[in-house]
Length: 353
Image (tube, rainbow, N blue to C red; front, side, top):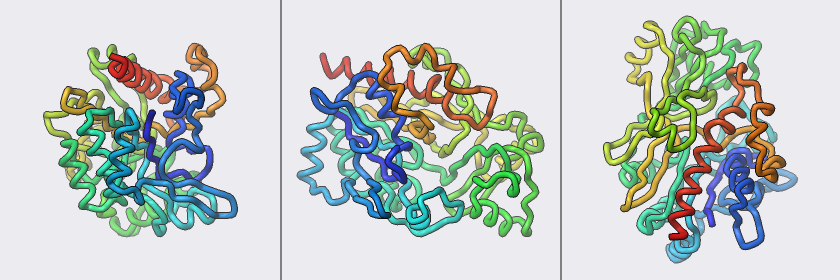
């Protein structure tokens, strides 16, 4: 049984953890002897209802005794998204490009207690992008960093297929306005590229051609690891990522590579941003079992319908056009799905021993 935590479910489709539920259903991992996991029901966090009502079913109200019982009953934990739900986004039922008041979100002290209990019991823990970043409190964030020997640099980033404010209506308003406030009211970008946001609201932009030889970040994996997880040597990643540092007690499975030119390299260096940094951090040893995916890996536009068909992976190339830099479906089929399949299969074999 898996404890899934998702605090960013704006719609019942639960896209922020839909990819995980798809894999669980496709492999017939069940919650009970009969019931497969359902994307709109089987998680802890924010539950949207009709008429702008919602339920909070996170771990925040759980006692230590409740958390101990949960850590005994489940086999693994997967924190898919703690970013949360914000006021305008919720009440207007759409993704808002302005910053707003937080309704619910952040890794809570109870979440952290639960993760520590899972770690002590040597049960598998998988976490993702933004687990302990904004809006998590500094106290809980430090606890997470010390517990799992990772550190957030304060930077997150994302690929945008256009920085043209007229053409790209998905471009966050606050991103443009903050950059202009920091750069003499100028926004000189039109092409695709990568935007970086610091926890202190500093904005850095790298534009394709001017700063980047390749417009989108790539995830690279060494031969030994890609053979182990059945993932490609290189794959584009056009969504949110965070820039972490890790101690030597952890292993870097894959890393991001930003295809910067000399101008882009200088901008990164001036802001303390590396051109290569971890994409997957792993600690899978006798003392505890932990993964951190430094990206919004479980958030892909995937329909649950296909999860019923065992051999559907053979037809995966029909579901996406890899030539479009912004598409994310290929990442699910070629990287996320085989990676999670392998992690779950190996861990399941251990549980049976």
